[in-house]
Each structure stands twice: as structure tokens, then as C-alpha cells.
Amino acid sequence: MAVTVKDVEHIAKLARLEFSNEEKQEFTHQLNEILAYVGQLNKLDTSNVEPLSHVVELNNVFREDEVKQGLTAEEALQNAPSKSERFFKVPKVISE
Image (cartoon, rainbow, N blue to C red; front, side):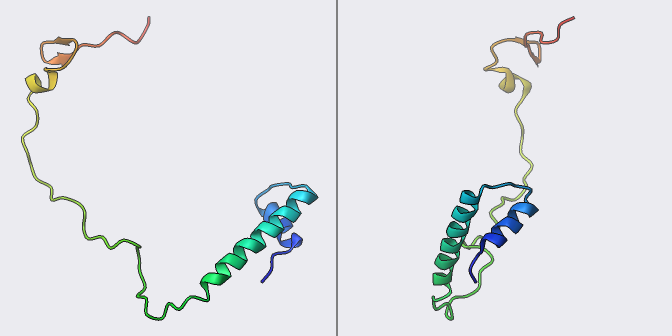
């Protein structure tokens, strides 16, 4: 099935795009080249290929949820450039 200029105009209208006549001709040519290339894929023998839902076979890649001890306040603040008691100290960012 070849793409015509009329097809390109219809697609452009659906996408609310406007093209010059030269652009329409170019897109027609490009779309036909794409379809010809995809047509080559139809010639491949895929009778012995199992259908896939994903190219890479993945099992559950998530880890189990485990409750672990978090950082203490002292550990969390040990590299802070400025701190006050158990809190990070930051410059005021809201002006009056």
C-alpha cells in the first residue's frame, strides 16, 4: 500500500499541521521508503520464533521489602555543613 499526497494531507489535517507542497512530496517519499523497509521484515521467516511480551526476559527484579534500621539523627547530620541540635541549618529563603 503506497502513501499518496492525499494521505499526507489527511494526516496533516488530523495533526493540525500545515505543509508546503514540497514538504508534502518529501513526506510522501519518506513514508513510502519506511513502508518499503518494513515490508522487508514481512519476508522474514518467523515460524520458529516464540511470541514475546518483552525483548529481554525478566523475572521479578524487585527486592523483598525488609525492615531495616535507618540512620540515627547523628549519622544523618555528620556531613551537614551547618546544623542546630538535631536539625539541618539552612539559609533563610523567604523574604519579608
